[in-house]
Structures are given as structure tokens and as C-alpha cells.
Amino acid sequence: MHMDINEIIKPENLVYTKPRLMNDNPMHYCPGCSHGVVHKLIAEVIDEMGIEEETIGIAPVGCAVFAYNYIDIDWIEAAHGRAPAIATAVKRLNPKKMVFTYQGDGDLAAIGTAETIHACNRGENIAIIFINNGIYGMTGGQMAPTTLEGMKTSTCPYGRNVALNGYPLRIAELVERVDGTCYVTRQSVHTPAAIRKAKKAIRLAFENSMAGKGTSMVEIVSTCNSGWKMSPVKANQWMEEHMFAKYPLGDLKNV
Amino acid sequence: MAKIKGAVVVNKERCKGCELCVVACPSQVLALQPTEVNDRGYHYAFMQNPDACIGCASCGLVCPDGCITVYKVKL
Image (tube, rainbow over the protein chains, first blue to last red):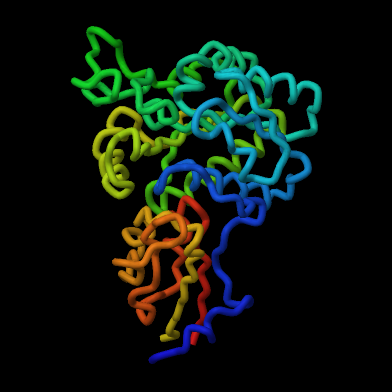
């Protein structure tokens, strides 16, 4: 049966739209970048929990450095890798606030490893959103600690060599072992089903921050199609085939 | 059986033509404009096959730029 499209497009029939807390600024991310999806999930969760006025986000250095331009909540921009240290101070001084950091793998897993592990070990009541795409996206696709073995980047054009560069660093497994973390999970945002699961994980992490249960980390295995030199669709397929073998999805810890 | 009809509205100036919505759609409703581009030069997504839309919002979920609004009615 044919139905005129204007009869469907009415406010009462709305099932999905851009989150209210995401503003109209055009995002600087490359087409198909996972950051946009995670930004949307964070905006939706904050809106659904009704904690818009209680939320303070800590932005990283990396592509997501401009996160504060896109989600209308309070933000602080941290020096490279220092987001968990800033978040510690913010949460201790404002214990009623929901404090989260949003960091990439170049920020969290390289220069910020010490801050991350010690914030987790102290059990700071913050949520850490960790975007792991195995590469330094913003600076032009250099090798990161999380780069897979054999994966080609601009600083390892013949592929990462374990004898020379070491092994890919699995941060979620590391922080799972320290006593301060209450929730460590690894998710992805490449399909609608995965996106729904990732949203639930982000919500639980934010609830843990509000409840003062300890540190939560939600690692999101992501794509960097520009850095990987692939189309967005191909990058998602490559991630499923290669990244998930080293970075398997699922909850590592939930106490 | 109740029939469901959906409709997708793409914010074409915000769309970057990444094609993720086209792949995510279970009913092959969406496509990228073959020749038209928006102000920033991207081949934006549009409803090529609007009658097949079931309003499942898969396209909206996967859109990284929040360009997609989805509507659904039960007939």
C-alpha cells in the first residue's frame, strides 16, 4: 500500500532523532568516524538519566579534543593524557557530580598510562570512556601502543614488529586486575545491536560514578578509517576481522 | 498483521556520505546521491526506495553525525 511520506513525517510518529544534548555544530570528525556514534550515546544517556546539570566531562588531547563543542554539558579540556588526574580533582571536590573522561588510545594508553592506572587503583568514582582504534588518528596515523601486530601505520609502514615495538597493550585487561575498578567492559559501535549494548554499558558506568562504587572503564573498540586508509564500511569489516581477535568484546569485571 | 511504514529524513547539509546507514539498513531503503553533493561536497544519503522503509531506526543509530530522523506509523 502506498502512503504519502508527509503523512508519516509527523511529530507523534517520531522514533529516532539526534540527541537533544548534541548541538548543531558540524562535527570535525572524518566521515564514518566512531567518535560521532559514541558522542551520541553519551548525550542520550545523560539526557535519559536527567543529569545534564550534574555532569562534568573531561576532554582529552586527540581527535576528541573538541568534544566540548558538540555535547552541551560542562567540560574541562585536560593536558595530554591527564584527564583521569583532572577528573580525580573534579570528583573529589564535587562528589555529587557525575564525572567522566573521554579519551583515545594515544591519550589514555600511551602518555596517560600512569594517570589511568593510578586513578583506577585509587578507585576514583569516575567513568572512563576509552576509544581504542589502534592508531594515533589526529596526528596522521602513527603507531600507538594498541596498534595490532603486523598492522601498517605511517611510523611502521611494514607492519608492527613485536621484536622492535613490543606487543599491543590491552588496557582493559590491565585495569581489570587493579582493585579500585568496579566495572570494566569492552564494547564496539559498528552495528545497531552493538550500539545498544554500548549504550547500556555507558549508562552503567555513569550510574557507578553517581553511586560512588569505584572506577568504571568502558573501552570502545573503534575504527579510524582515515588512519587505516579504508572506507568507513571497509574499516568496520576490518575491525570485526582483526581488532576483535586481540580485543574481544564483553564485560571483564562487574562488581 | 499490522503493517508498519517508516520514513527517514536526512539532514543533507550535515551528512558526510560515509555510507554506514546504507549498509545498516535491512530493507535497502537508503543510497548515496550518485551525482548530487551538498555544500561541503559530500554525496549525501537519501531514500531511494521509500516504500520499503519499516522505521527500524538502524540507520539513525549508526549515523555518526546524527543526520537522520526516523518516523514510523502502524497501519
